[in-house]
Every structure is written in C-alpha cells, then in structure tokens.
Length: 177
Image (cartoon, one colour):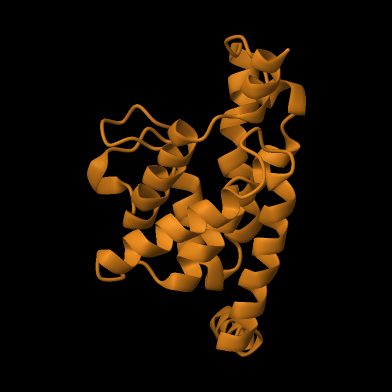
C-alpha cells in the first residue's frame, strides 16, 4: 500500500515543479544568495561572479551538469554560512576546533534542508560535496576523486577561484586603518 502512495507523492511533486516553477525557485534561491552576499567578507557581486564563471565552465565542458541544478547549488551552497556567527567568519586569527565545527556544518545544514525534495537531489549532492577534495582531505565525508560528483568539483573550482582572487572587505578595512 505504501508503493502507490509514494508514486502519487512523486507525481504530485512533478506537477508542482514544472519548468516554470523550477525557474521561479531558482530565482528565489538567487535572491537568498544576494542577501548572504551582504554578510560575506567578499562583499557584493560574489553571487554574480560565481554564476558567470560556473555557467561558462559548465557550457565549455559540454553542459554535463543540468543548469537548474547547478544554479540552485551555486545560489544555496553558502546559505548555511549565514548562520555562522559573523565574528567567526571575519576572524583574523586561526579558527579553533569549535569554530571549524561551525564552518563545516554549513554544507550539511543546507543539504538537510533541500535533500528531501527529489527535484533538488542533484543540487543537494553538489552542495554537500563542494568542500570534498580529490585526495580525500575535504569535508564532510572525506570523499575521494571518483566519489565526488562533477557538479561539486565545478563548484569547488569556482568557489576557490573566487576566494583567492577577491580581497575580503575585512582585510581592506584592517589595512586602511
């Protein structure tokens, strides 16, 4: 009896998420990301820079990652950071073990939020694994190369590129004093 109920629920979810509905959801996710940009030490424009780079890379690679899933992951991957205390994010000194627990939780927080929705399963996996590293030194699961989805690899590249090419605002304010 549970199989017909599951099928009915899946059909209902498909009806809720037409292509238009998915586009509306992605636009909503973008608005959330723009709000998080305001708290980011990298400042305004981060979302747009990440979007341009990620979509261009995906296109040049032959679009192996569905655009809507990549966009959702891109816009939501750092939403969990909005719940990390701002003082911790902007901390000039090394983070303590306790601080790292907070920071590492940002991927699982948003993964738990969207993974129950089949329509966002790819985006949820991209988000969960975007801090994994090919050699297994990443988090949260210490996955290695073949166990990390392509979307997470792409997001890791653009996220890292953004981090090393943009000067965080808190560095500017400290050096301008």
